[in-house]
Length: 51
Image 1: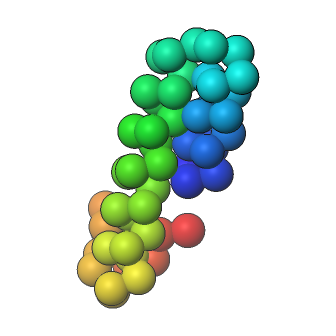
Image 2: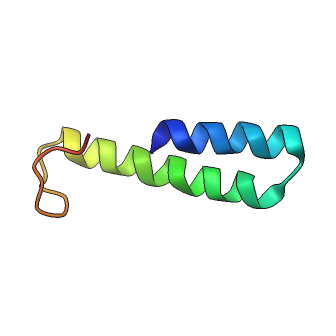
Image 3: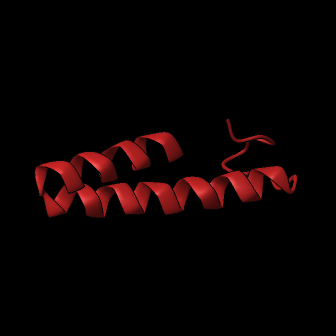
């Protein structure tokens, strides 16, 4: 999810499409939050690890 967010941000910047930048930032933030929560050992959506 983090990588997809970065790719969408880059495509949005190159193609000048603001909606792709917005979606990319949202995916990036959600991916980082899930990675941090998964790394602390908290269960997310019934899973102990977020891959």
